[in-house]
Amino acid sequence: MLSFMMVLSASTIPMKQKELISQMQVNGVDIDPSSLSKLEGQIRMVSDIERKVIAKILHVPVDLLLRE
Image (cartoon, rainbow, N blue to C red; front, side, top):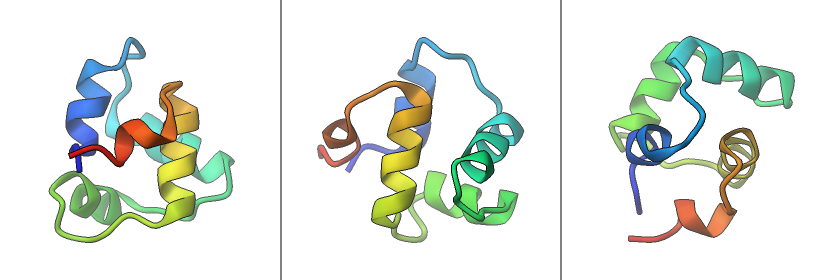
């Protein structure tokens, strides 16, 4: 699986962690900086809803976040 940092850095939308957290919360995902850091560091698994919302925010296909 691609790390979210790789997808985020490759995205055409420059976004800081705080902005991503805010957007995720607006889209119904309750996440804090610690949880997002764990996702970015691949310390914890991403839920399907988190994956869907992140893809939506970054304007990328969900399957991009599933590729190895």
